[in-house]
Length: 98
Image 1 (cartoon, helix red, strand yellow):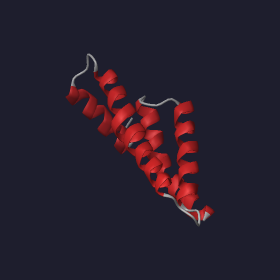
Image 2 (cartoon, one colour):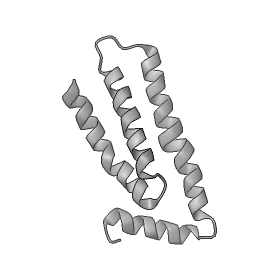
Image 3 (cartoon, one colour):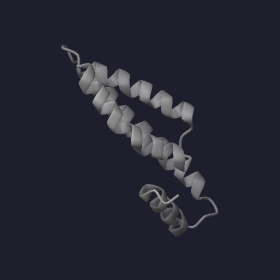
Image 4 (tube, one colour):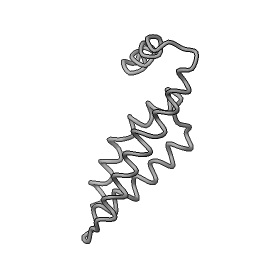
């Protein structure tokens, strides 16, 4: 069980590091998200899984990581900057040129 959880968390690390590099999350927030994700992954890999565990996992994924914080922080970063320029910078970050 621990190997599966560890592998799934390791798969998320590059995504969260990217969000930290872009400035959407601080190092402390990334650490907190990893801690919360680890706890939820362990709950999902227990012998007895409840519907509440799945709902909590989905809510965290939807609210915190994808819809909520990232969207509003990206909009804050875009204030006064064109979408094209932001997209170009993000692409350069993704490809490792910055």
